[in-house]
Image (cartoon, rainbow, N blue to C red; front, side, top):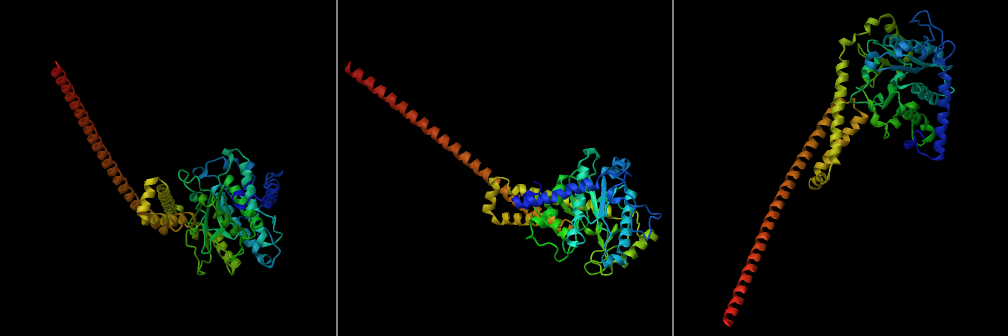
Length: 464
């Protein structure tokens, strides 16, 4: 059963997992069955006359995969095939009656325009599939919807599948459409085991924007997160921020088997906030995206930024060549690569052989130092790799501790070699002495025998 390793295998737990799985399968067939018009059911809405209509409450049609051969089969941006998804649907509450729906539709349109530029098929969930208006429940529709898209991709031949899917919340606005999602993906040659890219704010993981690889790991992860409130009601989620799905995802990502495959990137790369921790604007010219979580006057501020994007795009669209983000991204992966290699070397050393254990016994401080610095580095790799300065410092500390321990091991091996050499020398000397004694004893025996023969000969002569 998927997820059993984390959430348990009791009959109650398995029943809850089945309870989650059945709606997922139903949801997959319902929302991914091609319609007679060749459109995805979730996106069957009328097209608008203007791409930036401020009164629109609907988005452009997004064709089903079957009609996307030119996009899907190409190796856009070096072969990294990407899809994107979000959810945006009407509500009857007061906030939405005040025009929130229109604002969200305009923000979603910025993503669709960006997707058209870079060739990303888009999926927009248009119905509250499980919450019935209850925020703490309906947010899990995000996970179910993602799972349905991923399962749909996995039913296709390997060469026809997308590789990654980008999730964005409807209160995010693409500012600089010159930045593609692909530049944030992990290098294939070193990080094929990374399946999740996210970011953290001052509280913890923020699920407003993240990327997930389309594979079995993703299905397991989303199943675990969706089932968490049912299977582990003892785990507190939704505090201090009432984003239940965000806390569920964070909890699963902290577990063995998941944290090793997730990387938290610098949030300001693609998830800047309209109000940071100090209530000040985080966004600067050239940034890719702005997010509006927890903003007091959210909708007027979103309108302000949407007006800029729609009417004065030159203010926010900066050519990629004029930005430093490429260098920042390359530096991030290089630093993380070095850190992971240092941790690997330290782990291999600690569990190497009996000589190392003897070194740690003779020099317990060396062992404690290496283990403590490795523990800190592992925490940074899994939880805060975006803290590049701290990551570099922790890597240097591990390398230094490993160097000291390795030097002590070399000295121990040298002493051991000298001891063996001395022991061999002493053994050789002992053997020489033993052989000499044996030769002397043999000579004495021969001499005694000769003397006895002479004595016997003398006795015979005397008798004669």
